[in-house]
Amino acid sequence: MHTKFAVVGDSFAEGVGDDWSDGSPRGWADLVAGGLAAATDEQVTYANLAVRGKLLTPILDEQLPAALRLAPDLLSISGGNNDIIRPKVSIAANAGRIAAGLDAAVAAGADVLFVTVADMTQHLPLGRLIRRRGDEYADHIRSWADRPHVTVVDNWSDPVFHDIALWAPDRLHLNTLGHRRVAANVLAALGVDVPDWDDTTTLAARASTIEHLRVHVLPWVGRRLTGRSSGDGREPKSATLGPVRR
Image (cartoon, rainbow, N blue to C red; front, side, top):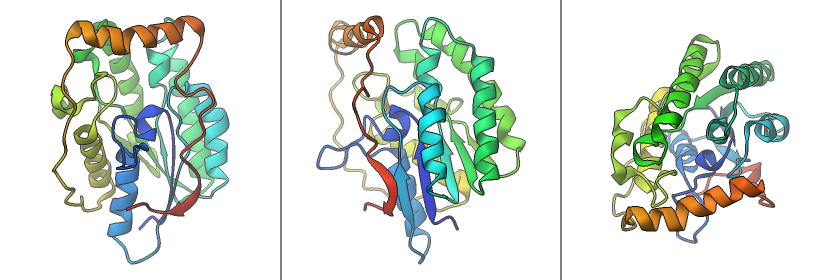
């Protein structure tokens, strides 16, 4: 059983779209940590260094080395998702960089998860363009499944995520139900029982297309045009290993 779990990535791994009762982000990685803790009598510690809006370079060059210094026995890597929606990207080159990161993590003694995002493209403007890139990226990721000590969790091809009910109002991030689905996929891949999570979740009302564009899409485009990120100045929610939050 893994007892030291660390996570690196972007908003997907940070847990944007699913909050604790105090408003702080929770998400699938927190739920996986809870599942690991529930499955053993040993103490499980957890660190999440993911920060929303991050591109692949800071994830691999900053978050990954910091995570490896914690000496986790289970390390989750996700990322490259924000790069895909940039005007220009070499998916093959990014996949090669991630593969090198997987090798470094395994060499450091960790079992490694690569957790893909869910396919959000059916609910987004320009979704077809993003889907083509996402499919190419997913093909690279699936090829890593045979690597020793690497587990690939392929949410991209999970048709359950085609249901808009699993997505936050911005249609780009998962909501509580969506993050629970990812957590269940990860725990199943690890051979760990999925907890019986409370299903008394109140979901936000769906905005009209015009309201969605005004509230979510236009601010996102504005950040892209000015080179800003939603994660600018933001610190990881838990940069060191600590007790699992219940």
